[in-house]
Image 1 (cartoon, rainbow, N blue to C red):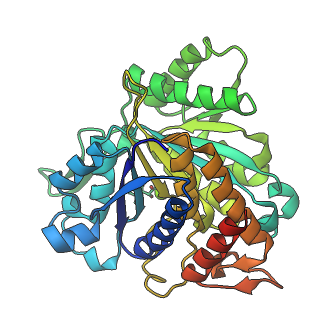
Image 2 (image 1 turned 180 degrees about the horizontal axis):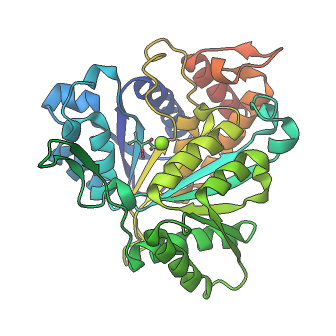
Length: 367
Ligand code: IPM
Ligand code: MG
């Protein structure tokens, strides 16, 4: 075993706390089994940080994250902070950590586990065997473009402004990530834009074409985002890797998540650029939010969080064996018929958040 890896835990708010607790149990088990060696630090983000420090993310927490080898995050937000000023909202903490760590590449795999093919609201035939990867640009686009804000015009009307911008390097670096992933998978890449209306996405399309010249083995196609969202529910298996901008990726990844049966199943990795030693900043988080309606009731599905740990083991630490073992334990748990409410099916055993953690730990120990 090499030197201890420094891992920062940011459970955040709502169900973020509960699902992170299950991941900590799994990390402890893996340490005991000699599979990993982590030095864990826990920090605050989102509403939890607002309550403690009056802001959704502190400079000290950012510095701690930058000092770590990887960050695992739960979720942020909740009605408790509805009245907080916009620039201090819990979500600003998440957007800031992404920006400050330079996490421009957000990988959101949507995989349908065989056992859950009937849990989707779509027909089994449409989703069974689905394995797609959405690559979302995460530090640019309309989420960060200037000018932005709400202003009052001389006539008293109010005007809201957000700006969609992308530069050539921003587009090319995310396109490269997507092409590289496509090369390791089915060699098919779909770039999603709105080039029939938005100039910024005309540039997006042109720059993706430029990068494509270095990847002659990848079949590249382009779709407008409205069509892409329709195709995702019509015939999702036509896709292999999808690359798109920040906002379209936000929307399409929630849609893709539901194909898999539940938003509670989807992990994600957010990666920065590699430095000269190949090290990159990385943050792993479930795609789901803080689900305040079920928070604190031991109802949340921890599998997206647990699968985010598996992504961390694989992408940040090259611990493929440990990642395989964890993913197999999740599959075995589903095969055992263990289900949280969101993926409950006839004949299965309904458990809570900690019960799902117990079941995954049991299967880990068996492997
Ligand atoms: C996501 C979330 C965030 C986003 C919110 C919480 C700011 O929806 O990670 O998909 O829009 O990026
Ligand atoms: Mg989202």
